[in-house]
Amino acid sequence: MTTLIEVINHGPIRELRLARPPVNALDTELCRQLIHAIELAMAEDAHGIVLSGSERIFTGGMDVPHLLSHGDDKHKLLDTWNAFFGAVRTLAESRIPVVAAITGHAPAGGCVLALCCDYRVMARSADPARPYAIGLNEVQVGLIAPEGIQRLLRRAVGAHRSSVLLATGALVPAEQALQIGLVDELVDGELVAARAVAWLQDLLKQPRQPMLLTRAIARAELHDALHPDLIQLDRFVEAWFAPDAQNALQALVARLGNAGRWPATAGIPGGSRGCRPAAGTTADGLAGTGIIEPSFIAVAAPLNDTPEPVVSELIDLLTLERLEDNLFRGQSRDIGTKYVFGGQVLGQALAAAQATVDNGRHVHSLHAYFLRAGNIDHPIVYDVDRTRDGGSFSVRRVTAIQHGKVIFFCAASFQQAESGAEHQHKMPEVPQPEDIEPNRPLPAEVLERLPIKVQRWLSRGGPFEFRHVYPRDELNPPKRPPYHQVWLRLSERVGDAPELHQALLAYASDFHLLGTATFPHGISYYHPHVQMASLDHAIWFHRPFRADDWLLYSLDSPSAQDSRGLARGQFFTRDGVLVASTAQEGLIRVVPDQAAAAAVPAKD
Image 1 (spheres, rainbow, N blue to C red):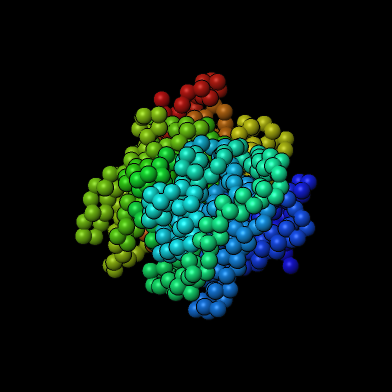
Image 2 (cartoon, rainbow, N blue to C red; image 1 turned 45 degrees about the vertical axis):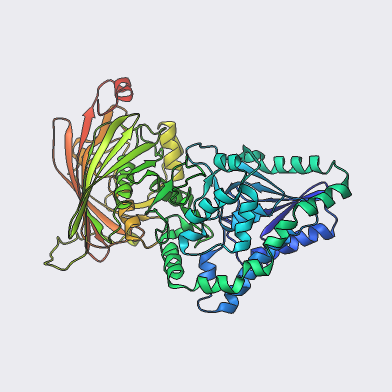
């Protein structure tokens, strides 16, 4: 049997660390092991317990795919929920004090476990723009928290705040959680467990029996709240099978993707694809759309226990924080470029536009202009204008703003699927990706000559795998005609949501496109005296596709002049279906003075 609880002894205090990667999703076995570990600690005369999780995540809540795998078998479903509520009762009825070391996000079931502890120490995120969050968000997937669980929240934050939090299904950022009493203390992430132990050590200095008896009296209402009559598990399971709940849960799993990294929309009040709530959301008058991290919607769990970090990070990048109905904020990621990668802004802008289209229409075209270089170290705000919702088409204009200035804008058009005349270009005859040798890592002596940030990016690798039909040495490029074909795919399987794959392709479409215009001139982006930047970009989405299946990106450049190059691209599935087309004009400026090239933004 796999051990899902790590036991760490701190003298008379026993730390129980949840260890079911990647998000400590609660299934039947983990709950049973938690019950056993608590009972064993009391039997072996431990004086206190610290319940902790993993870095960035306490527990992501119940394992939804595990629960859905039971199908219509109510007995198996009851068995899993009984295991969970058994763990909750065991915590609440512990004869010795328990402190929750909330090491990161604690949605849904994670919040319930924390509410059963005597004291709650929560991690403060290292990134203030992306705080950890805690709360009960079951309503977002059509579930109703049982009365007993609602009482736990009321006990912590009061009747009014709990009613608002429960009705909206909102998660509360850590700072607000501290203000309203949902947690008792905030510390830096690496100090959470140590601080929990220290608090227990101070508590244990009190006369033991008076402290334990006083504690038992103070926690009596906690025990009462978890009486079976207030949980009504049979009723809860019946609600699980209600059409609204099942539709929302199935939609959740479909959109979670690998390791749950793409959010579902079904059942999220005011929610939308790919959006986080504002980090500054307050507990009073919460209009919350629900989550801080997309993998933690309601009771979220992984579909794969070994996610590839770069893939999940990319989907995080495309998952925006919703500030208002039409206003979003996205973070930036350094991929070795001097400024924000154009594909990032394209993908985020498309995600923002998608979040305002809820009539079943999908994007068919996007036309964008890059106006200023983006700063990698600061977030970007996306303002969406709902320009038109007609009978068949919807149009959105998105403006990207950084430091109060517009750095990018685009228009995206969405259409309902309909039948009509069809034709397409034929895919070039090229070897299949399996017949092409994967890219070899750069030799160490070559890598060390590149800028440090480029070294880090190339050493780690990106979320997409590329196989070039005719590889080119980017550090010493020969002159050749401006034609290029490259197979690409996401390096890991993700969810099925078309919106996700369109945003991923928008991101990937900026790779290699403008570079094709440099082929006849024997230069590349990696040359220190070359400035390159996207000026505009267009994408047409023709047919359905998956970004995690091999796609051939066939590229050409018909012209370059006045320090600008024009490039075009077509994406084909491996069986020859044309799924998307691109076009881009970009700056290709050769600057004799290397220092000047490094110091002057390409757009100035």
